[in-house]
Length: 276
Image (cartoon, rainbow, N blue to C red; front, side):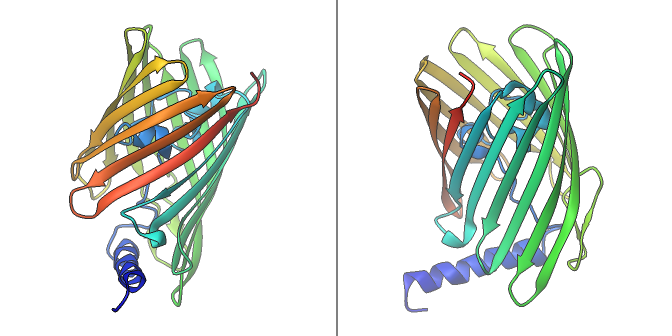
């Protein structure tokens, strides 16, 4: 390989082929959005996160009329780009959301489309469900798709504390043509305010065939226009940080994390609140 682009292409192929043929399933790249990424990828109980509905459909209930989009690149490889779009709207009887994402390149591409619904059952309890399609395309290998069903709960047992539980891909769907199942996982998380300006988040993720992963972080709002975030995740340990800047119903986010062997990943996003 004589050029940097050739090296990137070869590296991307190696990583992607490992995902397809060695992992227990495709779609191992979980989507967290730039706000969650800045806190180690935690956020199952992070209410108000514009990208949270894809992770926990119960979060849709508190978003109101909002749209959000973001772009990320993992380990500096254009072959590992991700794009995501989300929109939500609340009505008297329920809240609804739609999410779409892509990951990869024309060599290997994962796409997802979800429709979610959430409803407050009690003042302290919200439940949600998301229904979607996951599609996988690998050049010279084939295409496949599978349905997805996930359930989520968001509860606030005491003031300033939220607890989230998500059972992801509970239907254990198999990707047609690849003989692989969508990765079923159970995540339990908590979010708690510390004083008036800070919040801590903590997630435990259990996925079949993998060790339990821990994610944690803290977000501090120094003004209503500025948020700073730090965090990390295990398996392996990856520190992260991020920033949020708000102005007139819009909020810009940036986050990055550092893999000990593969290098840094970056994510940028924009949220727009339309019902202010």
